[in-house]
Amino acid sequence: MPRRKHLLTLSAALLVGALLMPSANAANITIDVRTPEEFQIGHPDGAINIPHNQIASKIASQGVSKSDTIKLYSRGGARADQAKAALEAAGYTNVSVQQ
Image 1: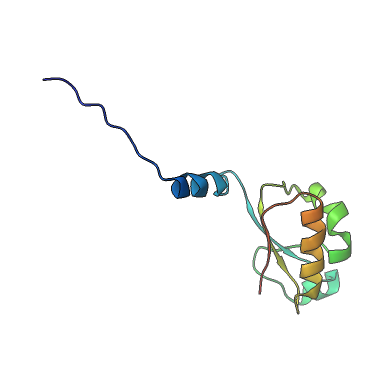
Image 2: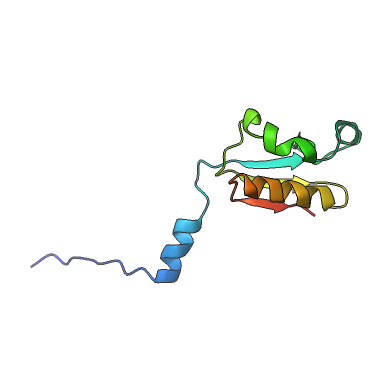
């Protein structure tokens, strides 16, 4: 009996989703962009502290790659929004503001 060859049909939407999915090697990083003093009082679990006005110059020295998933935190969100804009201008593509 002849062997059957199986073809996999992949929809365009599924292919695009798979291509846009973050790499399994990419890290998930939470950055608290408030001042060091505010960070010391309390911060999200596992967060690192890089003040919003220093983020563009210091993020690479923290070992964060442009493919990592970055969640930014600040008390009211304004500083996180500023940091997000700076990171996107520097080529970071997976940046969000944590509420």
